[in-house]
Image (tube, rainbow, N blue to C red; front, side, top):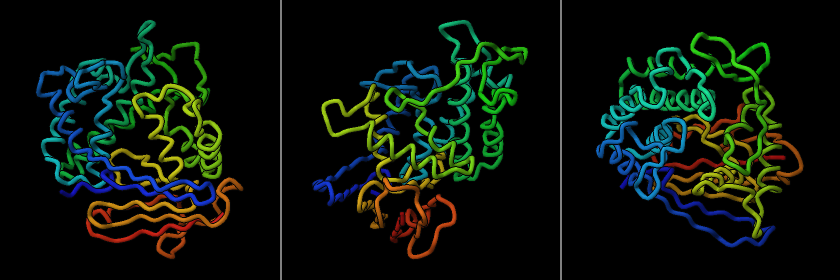
Length: 323
């Protein structure tokens, strides 16, 4: 069964720390089928928002399973019914449940009274889901919906206040709602996982690397108190795994990783189709930012690795980080 990158054996080597070989297997297709099952059982929100023991908990703000499914397919799970997935994603995103009507009408989720005044985070999550749907529609050849959801994914910027440089609540009339709670990044309690990568898109990838290494080397520890907060059913630990591997899937539905440099001496990721991704470090990753990245002997000018070629045909990507 061809599943691809998400169903992998991850083999980590860290000789300096004397770490033993670790193998992890995971098949995500079963999860996709479970997500679809919640819709078929009559979930009014569509695909599951936050399932737990096959029950809907309703505790999250957006369409949580949509970007996950988009990534699963993008990373190689081709034995998924793509037209079916596209249709249920669109149905989920276009229904008016859970402030979806306001998001579609105004281009953002309008503010509500406490304790339901989380309209900014909900707008962000709906925008992320829309981007993932756009990518699924692209691979399905549905260009009309690809363009529609790609445009709608930019709705998050309707919440950006240029005067203060932050995302901010808005009411139905388009007025900013005050006061503004300035964001603070704390990786121990259900953080915005991609926050460190804002530096990358601002032209300061070295700061992304520094923050990620600080989180993985000092906040997460191999000790009884090694989890710094709410692990959230393993989500925060998964974030840290990507951080230590030095490759993060930033864009939902896009077979691409942002490279930040592995904290291990050597990493090997084996795909089900026989492909491999191997990463090695030359120098100490805690000594400073990456000086250069080479992939199969060629210098990489930007810290992004597109892997679609080895998902479709067996091959090897050999990454070398120099510090």
